[in-house]
Length: 78
Image (tube, rainbow, N blue to C red; front, side):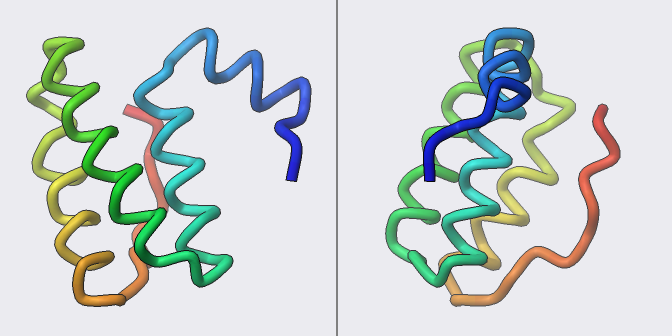
């Protein structure tokens, strides 16, 4: 699926959250290994962006994906 204009604008504004959304979509489409790989990149991006506040949630989602379980907690945007 090609990214929408809104997706591209969000990615430009906040690449960490844009990648997070992409990982959610991959998981929803049952592309588990791709979702896991992308979620690992999201964690690394948050670390590079000096966003330690995001790491607990991101690593929790990664652990769920690695067990092939979905994240059911909506992202609050922070």
